[in-house]
Image (cartoon, rainbow, N blue to C red):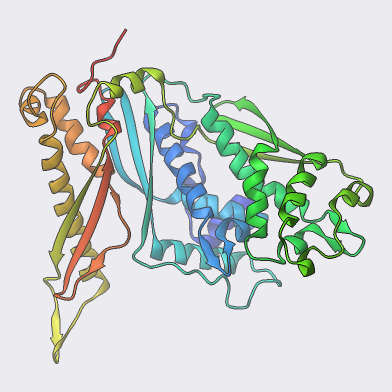
Length: 400
């Protein structure tokens, strides 16, 4: 939960080597860039929490076993640098990226700072490619208030709180001898199947607190029991033996569970005006992909095999990424402008459109990790959704 005391945050910052500024909430600033930045981080955090670390256990579930870990992971997400920023006419967008090697290092540090006796001595078995990359784009519309009580906020709250509530429900008894938590772990995927059904069963209330949204969720026992009973259908007798979920009403004094979380901003907001503008552009719904290729130039030969340093690899990946971005830029300029001609021609008349094209290629996301070819070259693949550019007033003017 995000309501941990500031002293705990400070202690974790010292333990993890994070600066005090990395724990500050960028949404405290009311400008559009900070709001887009926080939306990207929230979306990235939700995505990484679904990462499988070992034996079907998700990273999110491992983090929620200890409040200190949960807070430390949020602090690490807040410390990630921006990977791209674009200020378009009517829209501001920010991309935040996490690399596989950084994620592995952060989780190991979190484990060392908050070890538990019920964890394996070697810590979480992260199955991450060190060269993998994950990224998310957050955006805001000009004049949009920081708080927007939209379906996106409710959806985010439901997904995050479902994980918290199922952990709380684990202490409920399903028989005189067994609690719900161990029962959910009897079969791989059982816990996840129940969590998938929870968002529709919980009641969420939103409260504005400055630039953030506090979400309260309530899970009634009478709503949880039918979800559990549905999982018994077709279940092996050994797994379902001795369990009658109707008995939960007599075995437990609790009739409901409550959880709370704080959301910094809505996720991926869409306004009717921007959608109307994008709808008038023929290529708005497309995505564009490109490939950049570069060879490692600084290599010393050791016998017949080249020896490369990590810096050589990073430099080569950066060069391949630059080539892929330039290819994207050329492809963007070749797109037709709704007013006629190509965007390349429109850029010759509009300096602001040229700046937008240059900025938007920075938002392109990697498709998987870099590819190391047999000939020693490195390939980077990028993808870019075109809807964001289509919403720009330089492409489709604002309608009254």
